[in-house]
Image 1: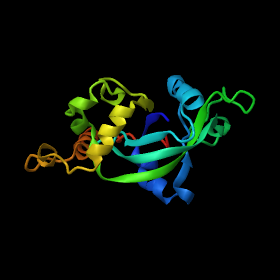
Image 2: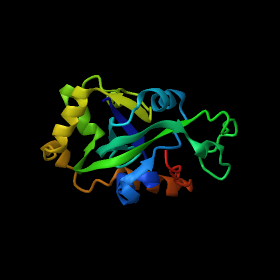
Image 3: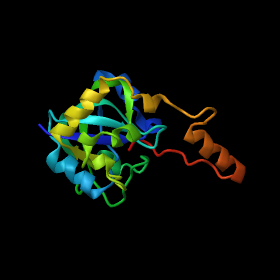
Image 4: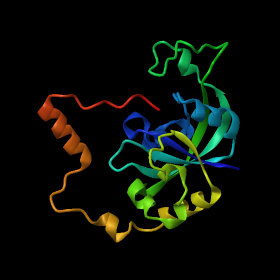
Length: 192
């Protein structure tokens, strides 16, 4: 069994959305990066465990776990012109892109924010914490997986609970700046 981390914007498809799906299961479609595609096609297998990561969120955080319930297979959204993930170069004969199916395992009682994870020495070397790492599908070592599961059972550290008086969440600040410039806030893409 291998361990993985899958990133998704919560506005597109959150872990709560996964919890509401039939059998709490969904396909992980829309991945359009060749290295991530290769993981989906060649490495991720039935029974592997994954962290569900809310990216581009306030805060970006690991929010729970899921298990892979179907090995990689062609991502049919790539050849559907009505789908946001359409790729005109892909077809049923040459599918190009892959997806897997995952099933919800657990939603953490509290999200584990990226800033908090960066403070944990045992997570040194984790791909998620590497500066500039943007890969939406990434491997996680068994040791790192265990550390994060342990953290999910603990209360938030005191430093994470402290906020400056009157500080607004970053999303509100971005929205206000965009409104002041009359620039629309970028909408999240559909799932992955």
